[in-house]
Image (tube, rainbow, N blue to C red):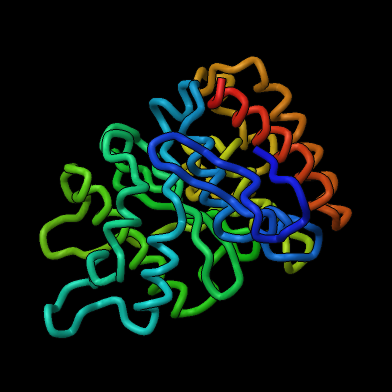
Length: 284
């Protein structure tokens, strides 16, 4: 839906799926060049992709809305271990935590091999990729190919624990061995952002295009995970859509524009068109 008028707080998008979600004009306006994209836009993209009717999102990948990770990072970034209980802080320590959990799809959390978990912290977005079956977690970060500091290393470990809590809440067994509370994520060498603003654009396109099945191999030889590899899994049947080649071409176009310093211009129009198409499919 599109609201008439120019009030920044008008609702311009409503999504009815697993949970009802709406987005205001001011949140979509955050996609303008040289601005930081609002968390609600990323959350909306997670729900939209999870609702797509193709093998990639129906059977392989579940995109975790970013609110729980962000709130847990903000609340416990100083120390993620509860000293009194001698274990990590639980999601239940968040105010209104059940409201956040209600936006998760229990069935997909349990059944899908990969969890894509975008997160915003200290004005920067990156994404965790959890391979549940192999009990491995990877970091896709358009600014860093290694952890930039001790705080981030600690948050990375905490993220694996938070995702494990979500899995247990959904009815899955814990990923950790007895006495362990976390996994240490491994960074992927991936093309970086050309400015201070486009980290969210990279995260949005990774969720849509990236092939998570070869990430472990990228860690082993430390080679760059380039644009051509982002959609490599499509050729092996992970995603059964007519638009696979269009996605690959779109990725190459974004890489070209990224090298010239204009990633946002290259990506936003294609992303918005994709969003409109998906919204139309959901409402039909």
